[in-house]
Picture 1: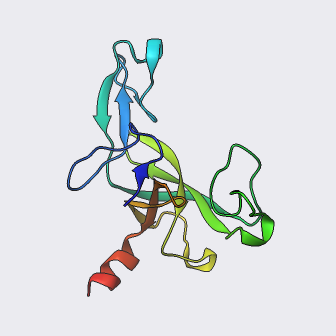
Picture 2 (picture 1 turned 30 degrees about the vertical axis):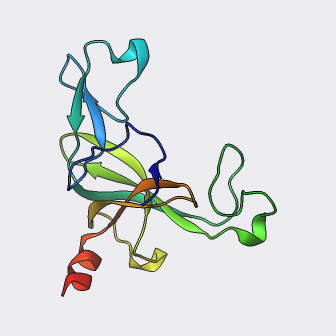
Picture 3 (picture 1 turned 120 degrees about the vertical axis):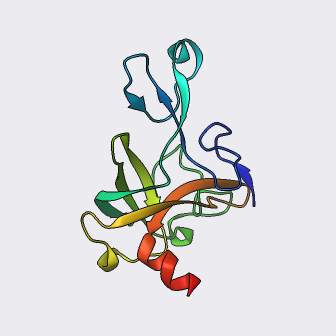
Length: 141
């Protein structure tokens, strides 16, 4: 595995969790605030499972500061690989924007159960994503 794209995005547990924050009001936020904004905010391990709330396909090379495939030296739009992007609702916590992996656009359904995972972002960094739980169970069988 590579380095974390951000050292504070997920825990280093054997079964990692995205790290959010719990405000003094009890509200859960993601990501965990930093600097002065983190005052009185408790680190909070978010649920590893949630429900797909919305999604789309990223079919073209994003603008800077994107540093994934297709954006490196000597690379360009022909090197870009489209990916799925969605919002996953972690019930009672927060809605998280995330890459969606291990699925095609036609496989996704509103409300389907999703699970947190870590995937490569580029040659150096890993990032987080969510994948359909059904695919996880099928691959384990």
